[in-house]
Amino acid sequence: QVRLVESGGGLAQAGGSLRLSCTASGNVFMINTMAWYRQAPGKQRELVATITRSSSTNYADSAKGRFTISRDNAKNSVYLQMSSLKPEDTAVYYCNVVIEYSGLNFWGKGTLVTVSS
Image 1 (cartoon, rainbow, N blue to C red):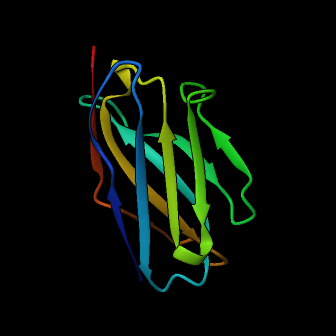
Image 2 (cartoon, rainbow, N blue to C red):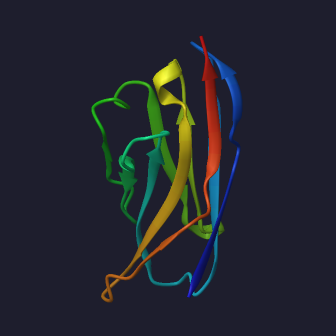
């Protein structure tokens, strides 16, 4: 099993920046894709960005041009650099990883991001 711990959430003003981190522990050797999701109050959890082991990335339309996902395989970590933040970015952000071959995935408990206008 894999445990994921997120950090870096907090309060930012509109137009500001935050950097989220997620570190995996446990059976980390078979981690493939890593991703960030978010869930705002009253809304469904949505995908923000993904990154493969070879660092190929994909972004939700709402994140393109503003957010950057990256990973450090040696540290078993994934990051989300968020810039030009908007109030609608306010949500709990969750880290997710997919295990190679098995297709199993694991979730962190989330970190809250609040963006004020």
